[in-house]
Amino acid sequence: MEKILTIITFLLISHFGFSQGIEFFHGSWEEALEEAAKQEKVIFVDAYASWCGPCKRMAKTVFPDEKAGEFFNEHFINVKLDYEKEEAATFRRKYPVQAFPTLYFIDYDGEVVHQQKGAQSVEGFVGLGKLVLSKIDRSGKYEEAYASGKREPELVLSYIKALNQAGKSSLKVANDYLDDAKDLSDETNLRILFEGTTEADSRLFDLLVANRVPLEKMYSREAFDEKIYTSCLRTVNKAVEFQFDMLHAEAVEKMAKHYPERAEEFAIEADIIYFQGTGNPEAYITACKAYAKKIIKGDDERILALARTMEKAFPLNEEVLKTAEKIRKKANRT
Image: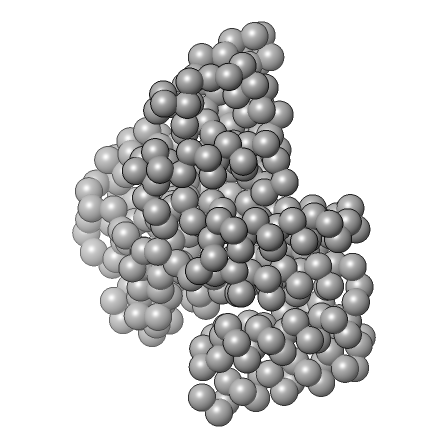
């Protein structure tokens, strides 16, 4: 399972983004806490100094990156603080640093969730964000009320979102709620459908695509397409978990039908995941070669990330390691 998560993290990072970099919050720290509480999000704080070289590098190459922006804008309230300026004095006393940059992740109650010293690459930064999300579990806040029989739409929606954020399955909660033939012209019910759809091999996915028009109006075409992509990707993950190729094929087929613009890329990504997870190095090599040639050609960062992922996937397989090295050299020629 760890291998699956590694490759999925790589592919999600490599997948195109929709934002134009990280959007930083403009306002006081107290206002940032209020906004985080309202949205039930963790606050990411870039604690930097104006003279710090690694800080400047992240500001220039990581924060403007659309992949980093897409992920962090969705999951965090983002704040930048120059630690040598007076306006950071109060914050600095409560959250001291020993090196720049220090990347703080602080919950809306002011408690530190995670603290990381040093600059990160785009890949490492998004991976760090995923690690932080895995530490947050707010589902217990709603579980007792739900277990007692309460089914108010807003409660169900909050419970589903909390389960998803904690990496727990929300499928049963969403299915049970929508089983009662809820009115899908209702905005909250549509949001429950959108948030509750996490896998392509589900009745919820079929309901989702049947309600594409109102959901695209509510969330945007890009967000809907990304939901298709991540749902299909999770079904490939399930195919590996259960060693069931039909799920692999179903994910590829549904991606081609409902998101044809990315079908070729996804089909190769699905092969990479499936053949790694099922221990087929020969087919894995073929898929990685295709990915390097057809999908990420000319993108040095993604080429290098693919090579590193290959080395971690089959660290003792000589042919995989040789192929990874050949792929790595392609970055040096671009």
